[in-house]
Every structure is written in C-alpha cells, then in structure tokens.
Length: 260
Length: 215
Ligand code: B12
Ligand code: SF4
Image (tube, rainbow over the protein chains, first blue to last red):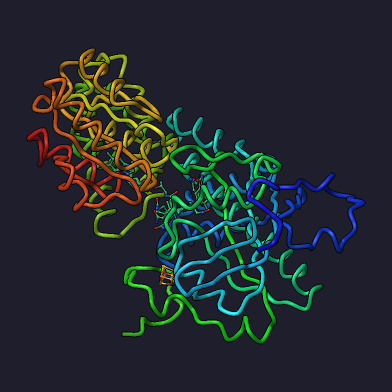
C-alpha cells in the first residue's frame, strides 16, 4: 500500500503560472491540481437539446429570442474552474475499486470500466453560483422562461466545464503515455450518490470552492464530480462498457444493449 | 365578447404580453367583469396551453412563455379583483425539503399552480418538517402541501415530513403531493403521500383533482 492516506490531500502551491515541477504535478499522490481558466461554451443547440426533448422540433421564435438574449449574457455569470487529483489504483476486485489513500469505492461500474487501469483521476468542476442565483431571482420575480433558460444554460455550462477538464486530463495522461476512460459520476450508472463523501476525500474540493452538504449536495449547485480511469491506451480501449451489465432500461445515455 | 376572449387566449398562447394587456384593457373598457376575463380568457387559455403540453405539441419553454403573457393580463386584473378573489381553487403550501437547495423545478410548479388558480405559499428551499407544520398552522385554509426533492439523499425527508404531519394531527387536513427528478409514483405510495406528479402541468391537474376542482 502506498504511503498516501485520505488525509494527505496535498494542495499544489499555486495555480496558473505554477512553478511546480510537472513531474510532481502528474504524480499519483493525490495532490490536488487547480485549473482556474477552463473555457466554457454553450450553444443554442445545447440548450435546445436540454429543454426541448425533441431534436426534430423547432421552438417558437419567442422562445428562441429568449434563448439568444440569455446566451448574450451568460458568460458574465460564470466562472468555470476545476481541480483534479491523480491516484494509484491499488485494488480492483471486479465489484469495487480501491485508490491510494485507502479510498474504496463500492462501484461495480468503475470496477468494470477501469479494468486494467493503473491510475484514476478524480475531478470536480464548478461554474460558480452567480448564474443559479440570477436564475432563481428571475424565477421568483415571475420571469419563468428567463429563469428556466438561464438555469439550463448553467447546467450546459457545467457539462462543458467537465468536458474541458476531461480534455486536460487526456493531455496529462498522454504525457504519461496513458489514455483515459470515459468519466463516471456518483449518482449515475448505478454508483450510489452517497459515495460523493468518499470522492471528496480523494481531492481537496475547497480549492475550487465546492463544498458537499450532509445530504451529498454540492454547492454551488452547478458543479460536477467525476472520475476517469488511466491506463495503457490498448488496455483502456479494451475495457468493457458498464452499459453491458446495467439494468437501467430507461437510460437515455445507454451506449450499448444490455447483455442478458 | 367571445371573439375578444379568443384573441386574448391566442395572445396568451403565442406569448404576446403587450397584446394580452391591450385586449384585457379593451374588455374592461367595454364593461366585462374582471372575474370573467380572468376565468374565461386567461385561465382557460392557460389550461389549453397545458393540454398542448400534455399532448407534446409544445414543450415547457412555450408553456412558460404563455405563462409570462398570462401574468401580464392578471397584473391588470389583480387590483380590480383583490388578491383573494383571484385565487379561486384554494391554498397550496410548497417547498423543497430539508437538506435540498434546488428551487427551479419547485418554482415552476408554484408558477403553474398559481396560473392555474391557486394561492401559493412558497416556503423556498431547505424547508424543515417544523416549518411546513408551522406554515400549515398559520394558514389553516390550506388544502394541499407540495414537497420537492432533486436527490435520492433528500427524498427521505418527504417521509419524515409526512410522519411529522401525522404526529401534529394535521395529516388528514391536507393532501400531500410530491415531485422532483428522482421521485416516482411508487415512492409516493410507499411513503403514503396522496399524489405524485412528474412535471408542472401534471402537478396543476392533479392538485385540482385533489381539491375536487378538476374540469
Ligand atoms: C441538469 C442536471 C444537472 C446539472 C444541474 C444540476 C442542478 N442541481 O442544478 C448538473 C450537470 C450540474 C448536474 C450535476 C449533478 N447531477 Co444532475 N441532473 C440534471 C438533470 C439532467 C436535470 C435536472 C434539472 O435541472 N431539471 C430541470 C428542472 C426544471 O426539473 P426538475 O427540478 O426535475 O422539476 C420538474 C419535475 O421534477 C417536477 N417537480 C419538481 N418539484 C416538484 C414538486 C412537486 C410537489 C411536484 C408535484 C412536481 C415537482 O416539476 C418540475 C417542472 O416540470 C437530472 C435528470 C433529470 N432528467 O431530471 C439529473 C440528476 C438530478 N442529477 C443527478 C446527479 C447524480 C448529479 C450529480 C450528483 C452528479 C455528480 N456526481 O456530479 C451532480 C450533483 C450536483 C450537485 N449540486 O450536487 C441525478 C440525481 C440522482 C440521485 N441519486 O439523487 C439525476 C436525477 C440524474 C439521474 N441519475 O438520473 N445535474
Ligand atoms: S445504461 Fe446508462 S446508467 Fe447504465 S451504465 Fe450505461 S450510461 Fe450508465
């Protein structure tokens, strides 16, 4: 077992122009690395996909004009930042996953998808709370449509920030001649949301300004936590997809049919 | 007169706030009763829009655009009717349960209920069982209590609140409806809530049924 423990959530000394040795940054001791300049883009199509539920339909002109007017101001209401921590995978028994620091996720989907991976990167992104506050304010003033659209933009922006951080992790892995798996989040794919508490032990979330309530709610609300597996590119490509074994028949994100 | 109401309804459907306001003023100038304009033009237009939503002819954004336009008309009638006369179907207390801070879904439900003719007491988010009970005591005319939760970890608070209502001897005074992304009908039955609704329009229809005012 490595010397790391759940409590050694080391913080990188700075962000941005960080003088930390890159070798150290990509080490597997669970050090929390901050990224405070994640760029986020949200398009009309992203929002339509989220709020219209039907790609064939074009919404009314009035709805489109509300979307455009919200899109013209959302950038001023978000500040996307994230952090990640790479840890060694110390155990994978096919049903659960153990990371350095004794962090044990009881998550069959990770065990399956990370088969053969040697490392995992835990990450958290947020876009801050300005947009959710503005959405609530509009809503409470009776501007339902604007509040709803701005809230949806916030959700899309959080996803975009997560994509941005994941792309960064792909580079980090590439520098180590590794590839990354898809990302998995507590609360999805059969992974109990209560394990958010463990995930928050694997990374110093305070550095991105995200906190977790007793009821496992992240604040700001427009935040995402996730983990990706890292391993030899060939191994990652061969790893099974959890959808094969998942019994969530109504999942909109299913990637392949369930194997009986 | 009917034509004017049809025009008002059409302007509500298409979300033309200014047109709604102009036509409501016209109807008033002609001597129509504010209550008739409210019931026969505005609320009925919103009900129609709700039906289009249920038939998946339109989606939530269009519904909200119509709700905005309806509100523009209601604002003109409010001072003439008095706050109480407007709310014809009864009082609903609503809130997001303790430990949960999500408000957009709950606020959408509040909004649709309000446009559907209910008086809404929105307690906001992170509402403890005690706060729900206090509000019920302060507003004894309340017919329905609505609870929202967006996470499975906060759903048990709905059960706790229902148990607290029972303890306080208030459970049979109100109907309880619950909703939110992870909530299901089965869960509603399991915790002995009276109803569940998957979205804001269904919520309005079901709450009307709960108070015996379905069309
Ligand atoms: C958009 C979204 C996000 C966004 C924004 C989330 C936010 N908190 O604002 C982002 C991408 C940031 C996100 C993050 C996460 N999410 Co998310 N997310 C969603 C999604 C797709 C839509 C939620 C939404 O905003 N809907 C729009 C609003 C308007 O709808 P609504 O709140 O549901 O309200 C409607 C109805 O529910 C109903 N209703 C609501 N209240 C009431 C009350 C009454 C009385 C009635 C009758 C009806 C009613 O009417 C409303 C209007 O029609 C849902 C899945 C889904 N399809 O619902 C998952 C979902 C909520 N997320 C989920 C999860 C797991 C997460 C994360 C934990 C993932 C992670 N590890 O990072 C985080 C948690 C974030 C946090 N703050 O802690 C799970 C929660 C499951 C659980 N176990 O609790 C869900 C259910 C997805 C799933 N697995 O099925 N998420
Ligand atoms: S079917 Fe859906 S819930 Fe199940 S593992 Fe695949 S993506 Fe996750």
